Image (cartoon, rainbow over all chains, first blue to last red; front, side, top):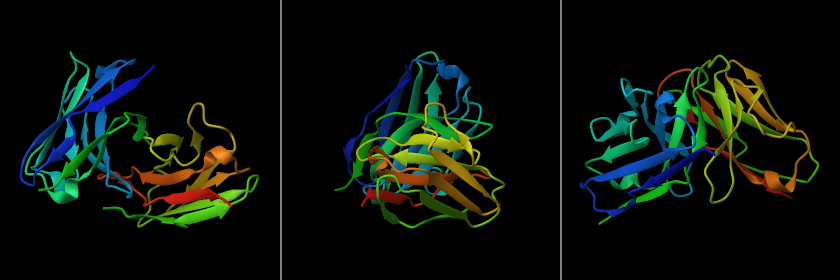
Length: 119
Length: 107
């Protein structure tokens, strides 16, 4: 059974940093591109970042470029999101998902971890 | 960025009804369109990919259609367990973008 479990969320002050992790199991992690998708409270879904199966390619949405870094450790089947210079508008539930072409759909999802940026 | 507009934002229908949800892209997305279902308190679930391909395990009452800028998700006979918010997502170009969702309720 495919499992994705996020961790590392919580309350953080504006301007500070936080690192999210996502532990994967039940599939060959190193064969899949991965992504982070976030959802602000009572809002819609927003793709945040993508990393290819081998870590060779990364994409980010513009508002997080230069502040967020997606990475992976295929030996540990773990995905990461380093978030720096956090802003109140980054407050959301962050989901770890698989994302692979050619259809570029978000197939498997974790339950999400809540990040609240507030003083 | 490609903007995705979903309508209506809220839809109330009766069990057994045929329900149609709409998604409109700000430019031609060449059928590169996926649909998700999100139940309250849960992560989204993929329903349909590439406009009309049903994901494994999804009931056949769900179907998708469309081309160009206009796309539709249809539930042929609404069931109580279909209460959820539905999102479309385009993958014609980066950044991948979602619609704002249609909340489906039982009347």
